[in-house]
Amino acid sequence: AAPLVRVLEPAGIGPAASRLVLDALASRHSPVIGVATGSSPSPLYRALAASGADFGHASWFALDEYVGLPPGHPESYAEVLRREIIEPLGLDPRAVHLPDPHSGDLPAACAAYEERIAAAGGIDLQILGIGRNGHLAFNEPGGALDSRTRVEALSEDTREANRRFFDSLEDVPTHCLTQGLGTILDAGQLLLIAQGEDKAEALRAALKGPVSRDCPASVLQLHGRVTVLADAAAAALL
Ligand code: GLP
Image (cartoon, rainbow, N blue to C red):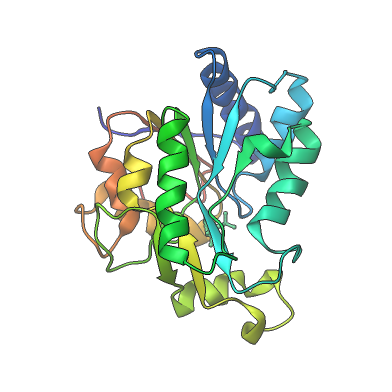
């Protein structure tokens, strides 16, 4: 099936996304949710927190993490997820997994992360944002469409986009660990959230353009169970 696109009022996106995640949480004894960072999923996490649901039976896997930030850095995705989901949803921190950017052997840390996902039974629902250059997680344009979790360099466009979270461009990490596009496609269900005109061209290329390395998010067309929740500005070119 082609990706299902729902265009919603900005205020409706968090609650609609939350309903999908709550359904996924209810569908399995030990559900596994893949979580994105960035601004796109924040309304979803707020809606989940407001739902009052019990999340004790679930486990959670991050899409990506920066390399090179000191442990506990407020913009590390470990800390972002602590603020965005662990505290508001009352999660056991041990149920929230990230690849280890402090490992002395980063490729081994990436392989171990893939093994942790597999040992959990695979990701049932993966929450995604989209980069304005069409990236998914930190899979930048030009990379293989079947990649696995690995060390990557961030594109200058992505470093510029994420500069707002740091004091200066020099402070934005140059490298990261990221789930691969192949890892993402293994999830049972994908939920992409896109808001704002900045994302309109990336969303058009992802859903209407060719499946191509030029737009990593075009792999969404290869997955049979994708829901896109977008506001009118992000959906303007569809
Ligand atoms: C970031 C993250 C992605 C995120 C994307 C969009 O750099 N690594 O996981 O989905 O870019 O971010 P935002 O939602 O803030 O626009």
